[in-house]
Each structure stands twice: as structure tokens, then as C-alpha cells.
Length: 96
Image (cartoon, rainbow, N blue to C red; front, side):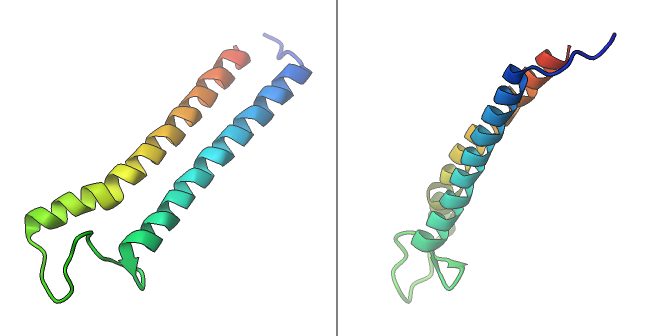
């Protein structure tokens, strides 16, 4: 099968995908920066609710790790991954 020349619509769709992926990845990076700013001191993680001079319990560390870091990152990463998957799917359909 002879490849079809790309139309202007193809270029516009590629540009849309690039823009969407870039924005999604910028949000992942911003989320990382927010987590570092809100939950660390000199780039070391400080679990939320930790009283100065005390050692947090394992349960507290687990809960804080999930709420302070994992849940925030997971939300942004899942969204970025969905955008990339949709772009891949649309590109594959267009190449058929």
C-alpha cells in the first residue's frame, strides 16, 4: 500500500498531541516541585504532621508517603499516561 501524503489535518493533529503531551508532562514536573517545596527540607522528605524531635511511627510514615507524595504524583502521572495512550492510538489509526 502506498503511503498517503500527510494532509494539513495530520500536521494539526500531531501539533495537538505535542501540545497535550508537553502540558501533561509540565504538570507532572510542577507536581514534583510542589511536593519538594511542601514536603521536604533541603531535599529530604519530612512526613506531614511530624513533630520536631520525634520519630514517626511506621504507620504514620506509610500514610504520609501515600498522601504527601504517591497520591499526588500518581494522579498526574496517570493523566499524562492517558494523554500519551490516546495520542498513540490516534496516530496508529491515522497510519492505517
